[in-house]
Length: 505
Ligand code: FDA
Image (tube, rainbow, N blue to C red):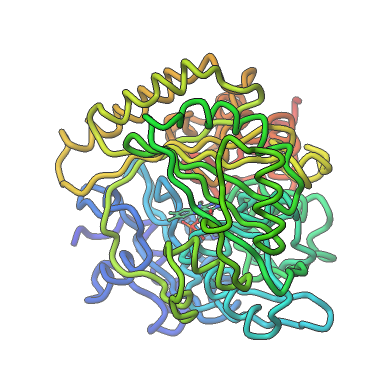
């Protein structure tokens, strides 16, 4: 391995003094690569060319995080927090440029979940996965749940930092809407709870995107009630069986359904897959569909009743009868390369656009589109209540391209496919600015400049507005103001972190 730069060398000496050796991995450590890759989800970023951290601190205690931040601040080595490692651009463990050394504070070991069923709350460590959280809740009470994302291996830390949504969104809103307290290590290495950090910072960490404000160690969540029985269905409608007309109709129906119903669509190959979760019985779900969306033709035979935790398994692993313990599987090495992008849709997209979208699936590259309806509870929350501004949209549109072969040419083909489709959709999606979801991180939208380009090492606010206002709209300025207050030297910085608001504004 290359010799560390002088900043890095003094940082590593500082870590050696302040931390037990077993929690620090440098690239001289035999298990450095396996620790680095332990939660990487995208093969694109396992490549040897990816700039990697000078050290990974596998924190086993709050004091380890504090020491890593203090050593970093003292010796000019920035720290990137990593919880579940699912960042679409790998920002929790890689940098675009090798110009400045950085370190990773890995929180995977800080993953305790303490559920208080009586008070309907839980404290959860950032390093827990959503699967571990759901499992712990269901083991304490069959009548409690949490409105987070679908992927069970997603880390709680990054997910809550960017908002987080899943199949309970229309009933209960975002995961971050249910955070009632948190403990964070700030840029000076202080340990602060909600009362100590103040309401501005507490606002910013619930949706302002991970990696900008500090390292959140744990979160106190308000749990939600779930019925004893929920109902689900998955029906396929191929292109040649009116899928285009159904998707076109879906855009008006799904966001206006009663909030107990979530009905999303996944478009792949020449097929539209309609997936639904209903907080009630099959009788209620089938009747609601017959009344509101008869064209879809859902029958009682399509519907399955189960408990809420079984529905979590059903949507995560596609099927019934899977053991609950699958939720505890934190995943192994990544098996695919992927690139994703997102949009928000405010007005229904015309049917001819959906019709022409099918031809994209016949072009280069495997890919899919996921249409997640909003409406319901989302419309009742002010776009200013949290940094997440997309409360009034019809639906979120996710573009997801994936492939299994290695090589620049293959990657370029697939990334080109997804960029092309995203470009094609521009006239039909939200505008001024076009919206995007920060948890579907996309560096094509813009990046902070190289460290040396900016004044005093502080990333540029004006430049960052290009992507910052796509993710956060008017909330971007408030996020930058909070950043200026809590981290004026931009210690927690990555390619798309929030820059400090210049004092002239
Ligand atoms: P990771 O550890 O990579 O962190 C993401 C970002 O947050 C990085 O910038 C990191 O530095 C920062 N960060 C991490 N921990 C932090 C902490 N404790 N304090 C401060 N900053 C921290 N989303 C969704 O809304 N609904 C869904 O259903 C899904 N499903 C899904 C499935 C799969 C397979 C993937 C790969 C992703 C999703 N997502 C999703 C997106 C997911 O919510 C998003 O990638 C999260 O940021 C991932 O959080 P991790 O902790 O795993 O990521």
